[in-house]
Length: 574
Image (cartoon, rainbow, N blue to C red; front, side, top):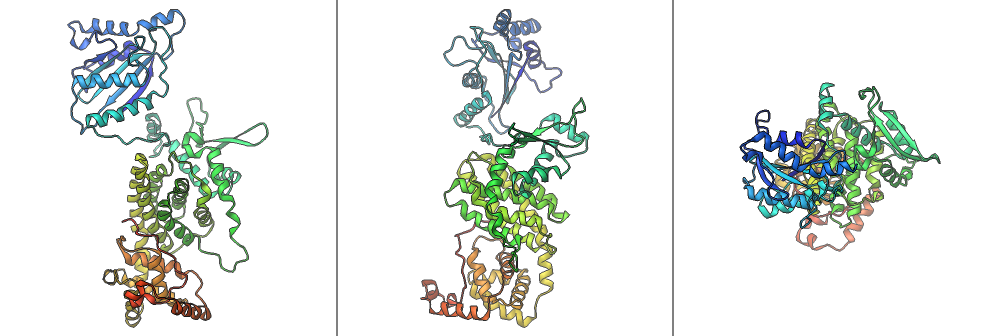
């Protein structure tokens, strides 16, 4: 059940609207189901309809007029609350709506239970599925009603009503959602030919600037370079206090820019929140050594960091988990400017959906997610990959992150975040399908000779015996053998790479174990191949090691596995 609360200036006008059946076609049989004393005049059941409407408005306004003589009348003295049941809910009786209305006005302090001086109010039912509550916000002792946070208190009471009456339970938020588009904003965007409102476009721009920047000052510089108007506010000391942004050309009736502060775009886009996030990431900026002969691929670094997130979410550190989800959201924010045009629509929708899943009431400790943030910033500064394999690898990991985020929020009853993560998953999967098609086809076309392929088949059976038949019968198997042949050409041992790929990522719940192995083999191939001396040392240490129970059960399990990365358990189904 949903409550919508607003204020107004005219009791007479609102009563006229609620009992109108000519202009408002959805008003059927309007009548009172409850009132402050149970004896309010009901225009819907009276012989003189117009006179009774006027009398009802006068009765409601009695305390307002009395307070007016003392100069105490609130400017917005009308309180209006609409309560609507879900379409699948059973039709409630007038008696049920009576009790629900009384609970709501009591919970919001409009008319507390047992308080004889509460505000005057009535509940009008003019359709089967909803009622309208009208109250005047002056108490009998002529003091204004104290109805602060009335929407939250009403919503909390309606959650209890849903359980008691067996109604549809509405997904409720935790006050961390970004403000929804208003009807005026939506119509203005439509007139300008835009699907997104000015607020939503600015929100996306600011989030991308946060993903790019390495410190608060650079954030403001990057933001100004995006073409939006930026107004920075400072304290008398010169320290930055906050910022406002506006779209160039988006003006009000006076021709002035329509400004939005960061907190009006989203709770996590206020300048203090952005500064906290970027300051936590600053300590990682010096990890890249310019003297290294070979810098790691930032896409592979980001993929590796994303692959660790599902396991990190299960470790019980909620502050760290929230930080990883926020960092993953930043990674998604950056992707639309890095990927081919055909993938952008799905990724943009994934970004918009997952944005809600990056926030909750849990305070993030952002230093836990430095690795992913650093990789994302490096991705934005490096040339975009040409073959699409790096993007497919990252999106393959992103699918698992979206599923893990759904389960993490679900366990903590973050209903809106659960729906957002589920929606983003659909778009990430669609983007993965688009991004993976070309690199997989290119690998399949470069498949090695039949003799080479036959040589890799036993290696696949040894590394993944439980999934060998599924892998070998997969159409993508040609692409896998191509990846193994390329790794061998680069100096790697294909058998060892296969074992390492299987160990790093469980295959039990993967839709396509073959594709998982392809991306993992390609990522491992990017690392320098071990020298012959190192490979010999690895082989000796492996041979000398005491065989485990798995090696005793399966002789192939004793094959050399250099620097194994432990599996983090079963992966969620994609």
